[in-house]
Length: 172
Image: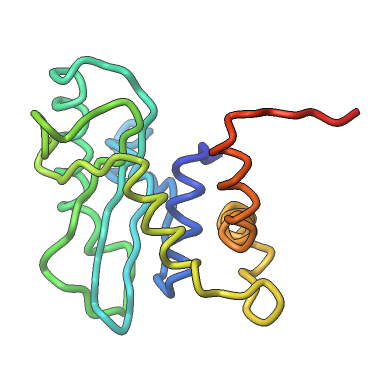
């Protein structure tokens, strides 16, 4: 089962027209099990963009993260070309470590991939939804997180005044 960050990432890329594979086990071992699981791999058939995203909410040391992401991104480069049989994939795979508890100031990359902080992804999503209308171009209901963010974007004036006031009110 996917965690929230994996689900959010999958939904966003799917909404943008990518073919998405999620939680894919790769590298079948002779005695059972797999070498690795790839969290989100997405391919856009028109732009030919191929991206591998590994979201995490960990607070591990940079050394542990480096070791884990190096293994995952190496497995991605090795196995992703077989995940979309019948499609002409590019040679280049963009690899992104999507993190919540991190900064790119001292660590712009991780395990050979680019670090993206969650606020950057959320900004992309909200920017991409800013001019969509809930009445005429609602996000499909099978993308519940992105659909929720579309409503947040639609009602942003209400929310921004609520957050700017610093007052929280609860109604019975």
